[in-house]
Image (cartoon, rainbow, N blue to C red; front, side, top):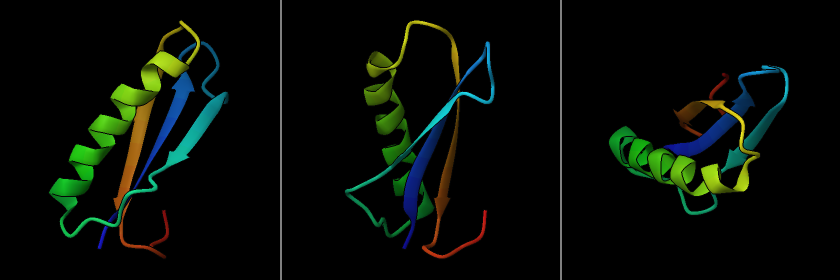
Length: 66
């Protein structure tokens, strides 16, 4: 089972990040998890300040070190 999380950081200040963890999962496959990550990013963009952001994500079994 895979759990999804995203990290959004501003391009201007890479130390200014916001992390969001999924509340729908877990997902049976990594591919399903990645689809959920894409949806989470699309839903998050309108909530962020209008400055460029970079996104990173994690799809990992619960308890997996990152």
